[in-house]
Length: 132
Image (spheres, one colour):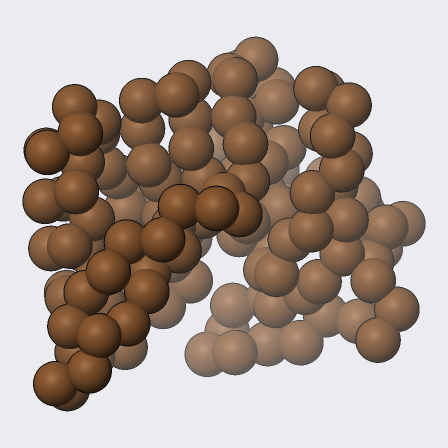
């Protein structure tokens, strides 16, 4: 089922990557990015292990970026940038990347929709959605 949050389609399901690995996605934007990365033949993984510490509202938290691309870029897909903790996550990620010789990119969903056909993404999701 597709739900909308502030006009952005939200969904859950599984994507079989070109690498043969099946990854879980939590949003239409994540699915679209996975499909795009496979289309351009990038080497990528859906991040499941990297945790970047940051402080928000006086508490230490862990930021888990969405993707690691070509082993050098940490990439975060954002459907909505209005969450107050986002600047704290981004600062922590930029610092982490600088200290570890990596790159960081924050990609808004409206940019993703310019380089992938959303009808193809929706069709894939409809066939592979996680039954909730």
